Length: 91
Image 1 (cartoon, one colour):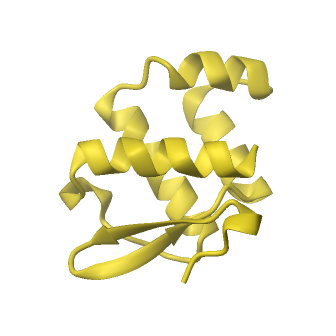
Image 2 (spheres, rainbow, N blue to C red; image 1 turned 90 degrees about the vertical axis):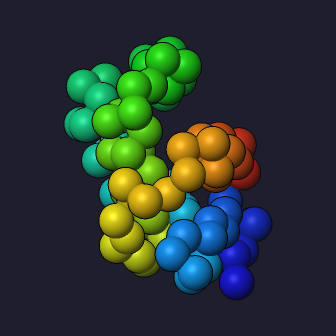
């Protein structure tokens, strides 16, 4: 079960429910993966994600929630919604 107060979001994948969470570790991982520094640069970069970028961001948020999942099998529309919801709740 997710904890909205912590900015957690759930995502169904492969018949299982996983939690996404924007932790400091996930945030640092996303900054490094997208080659940006700071929230403003990250916000701009998140507006133009490629499919590969989305997979990196989603994987980091899943690890922040304590899961390691093969993100390649996740529906991209659901992935985008979950990532957006996670950032919205956390910030």
